[in-house]
Length: 260
Image (cartoon, rainbow, N blue to C red; front, top):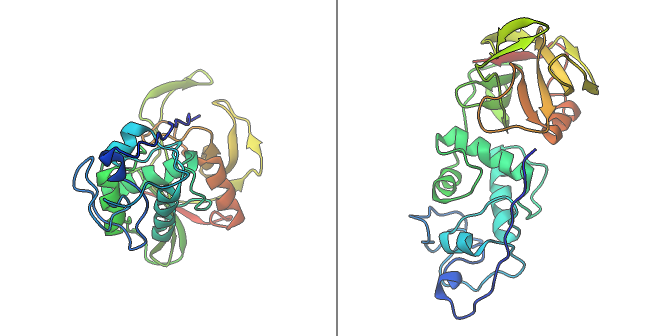
């Protein structure tokens, strides 16, 4: 399971470097040119007073980074931008927790940038530009799994409604029931044919509320969803994300799952 990391924000009223990276500008997002520089109009606007209530590592403040453990108005603005673009989050509460990290992974994957879960200059630029993945289908309610970018998309009539970080087959060999296998998620179009509204025990471990679409391969919740392929073939999402998929009927019986 992901581990939260947080630092303490030490106030130095005479330190100009800290003053240069502070509260969110309501005007919107701006691209940070490089670490430690925050142009006017960005989430870290130069010359603004230091934000009260921020919980940031001093080095991150200097470089304009936000990562898991941070709290405050800057985090809330990032969360709201992610939500507005369709990256799934359970709300904008100003606390950079594991679910925010998952959403940051997703936008980083969509933008083709480093998948580190940290909001830095490149991630801010992607949010500025409104980077979103496109659907490959044009009609109906479909769930698409993009293997190359490791994204799960909820699609309706060709429009991407929600975007999730996912982790699919690692491509590594493993042994199950005495049989040698390779951890792959086969491409193709499959219908959801079975669902288990509980932890479903199996030979390779329990799956949270799985929606099976190809034999023993399912979309399911899991405690660990890294930004790279790591499963035995299933498409992992976070526990909370799987709860949302159930509640919103995005993977009803017979819903097509397109693996591409």
